[in-house]
Image (spheres, rainbow, N blue to C red):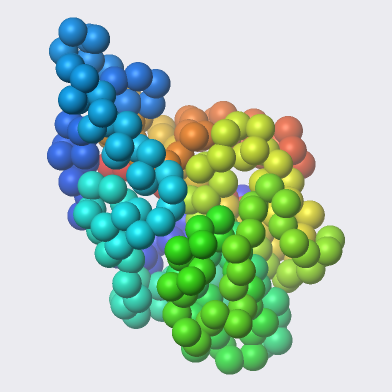
Length: 240
């Protein structure tokens, strides 16, 4: 198990942290304003924002940036270099099998298959919308599925990756998903999770987060990995 940033080739997106933070008005995991500082309209707006995002539907993937991605469309500048980075780091054989847990529209899998045609790729995502709108070239390899109960036998894949997905589950579900990733991997695994090291990163995360139900300091994540017996690699998604 090692900390390694396999996302260092992924472009750093522009995040309207302040704008989104202003819409997240109160409560756990949000900006803590005094109750008298907001009215019923504010509460309604907050709940719409969070509930809509956590449906992982059209609004989250292809709606306004404040709800999620702001248009999750394929562009080679996003995943191509990362796909190559992952394969080269793990020295994957030409016929290796790769699973992406939380594959969304399958963009990483598409680039893996495009760059390395012999790879056997598969993906699962909780979102019906994402799978329905997956790239046509990869639709035969993706399916709707739950990270807590992966539809594969033990030791099915040479590499299992999951980037900013297990964090979207509550703590117990997050632990189960990590166990499942470990279970279906026969060689390698890589997890990316929402985390922070500094107070500023924590503050920014609370402003930005729409979907993560488990978000912790990096030391707490390491303790979780040890608890569930995770042996793969990992890195953190910071909001700087």
